[in-house]
Image 1 (cartoon, rainbow, N blue to C red):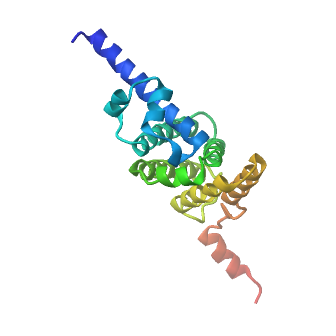
Image 2 (cartoon, helix red, strand yellow; image 1 turned 180 degrees about the vertical axis):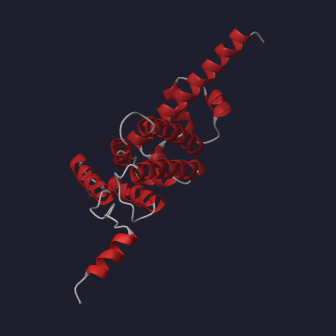
Image 3 (cartoon, rainbow, N blue to C red; image 1 turned 45 degrees about the vertical axis):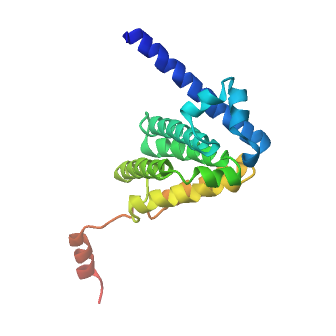
Length: 209
C-alpha cells in the first residue's frame, strides 16, 4: 500500500475514533451513563453500528478510551508547565494550579468511579508524582522549599490534597486550598540557619560559668 494512502487511512480511522469518543461523552453527560446505547453513539457519530463495533465493543470501553486520551492530554500539559522556563516554585505553582483545575472539572460521580478503574489512571498518577517530586527537589536545592520533609512525601501530600478539589463548588475554594498547600511548602523552618560545629563549641567554651 502506498505510504500516502496508508497515512490517509490512518488519519480517517483516527478521526472516526475521536468522533466516537467525543460523541459518547456528550451523550453520557446529557442523558446519564445507563441511558446511552451503542446505537445512540453510532447515530450521534454519523456512522453505522457495524462500523462502531469495529472500534469498540461496549459503551464502557469507549468511555475508558476517552478517559485515557484525556489523561494523556492532561499529563502532556502538566509536563510542559513543569519543564518550562522560570524558577522551580513558579513552575510547581503552575503545575498544581492546572492539576487543581483538572480535578475540579472532573465528571460526575458515577462516571468518575467507572473511569478511574483503568490501569492508565495509576500510571498517570505515578507520572504526576514524579513531576511534582522533581520540582520540589529542584526547589529545595535552590532553597525555595522546606528541607525538613522529604520531597517524595511532600509530592504525595500535594497531589492527594488537591484531589479534594473535585468536590468543591467554586474556583475561589480551589484557589484557597492551593494557597494553603503552597504555603506549607515554604514553611519558615525550610532552611534553618546551621551554625558550624566549631562555632557552637567555641560559644560553649565562652559561656560564663
